[in-house]
Length: 428
Image (cartoon, rainbow, N blue to C red):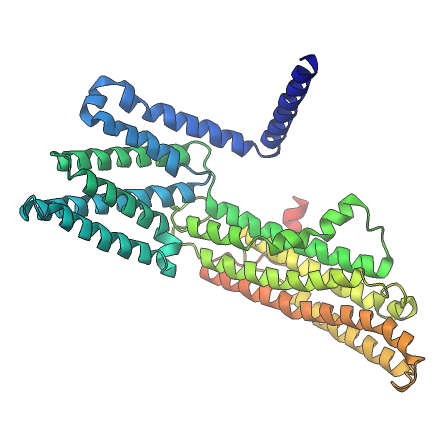
């Protein structure tokens, strides 16, 4: 028994430690929980206060259910669910009352058949609408609420005499619940989906630049790959590759948000998805670069690697500087000033191509039929692959730059600061 109690106490202590780590790592999660508790406390007065309870009756419980269901961590997600729930409930309630009136006019004998037919038609149509891409992206939750509310109100109306009053009470309590959620989520430490998407794109750019630098440095300098910090930077591209779903959901929720901070109501959030897609295309090249590091032959061509080492390191440095500069332009909402960087990048690419040409001219490769040529080929193939991927990254970084420039034009970013002004600001 003593051992069982000790084991149980250890498990509880470990759980509390992990909970504390989660709260310290992201305090917004704790604030989110407290905000939900505040919303539930406020909405519970509908049930506790007798005048309000007499006005809404047992339907006051729908307001509490609404708060639990629609409350999300970001403002955009809460508004998305709240507006969808209000619209879906209102339309469903209106149609349910209409169907109930038509059914009662047809007589008690045919009333259940008419109700069943309407439930079948509208339920099937609403379900089919959820397969339409634009409806699924913006109104999927509303369609689900419509099906649920219409079925409940229509079927329960067959046994309830005061259907209109019941529908009115349910719609009113849901509107109250969603309105309270909106007020709490927007006034108490708001977390904006648009701002989260904005910061995520900037973070992914920095991870991309660090991964590229780490890959090239490790390939040519044989740095210790087991270092935890270098591994984190090197493999940062993996989180970039897996961020597509997160970006799409944030962009969808950001469309529902009002103007806030630096972002207007019709801020071009879809352009962030284009930038994210361009970043991922570049990250796929870095993933291919990383596979070159695991090749058994990439350490065998040190003599050849020395001939292109300088130009490759210079090119990767320009890449990372350009990507970070683009991230800074998004962060400051100023048009990017990467003209000089891309000029240097083109020169570095040309220099790297010239180095490859000189290597091919200096190598005396034997005919393919000669077995002695195989080791030489096995030495040069990983290097040529690595260099070809670096040159491909150059074109993909330009795609990222074009997407950022388009965002700057559509979102009306401020003009880029001149070098003199930026130096003065840094000195100040």
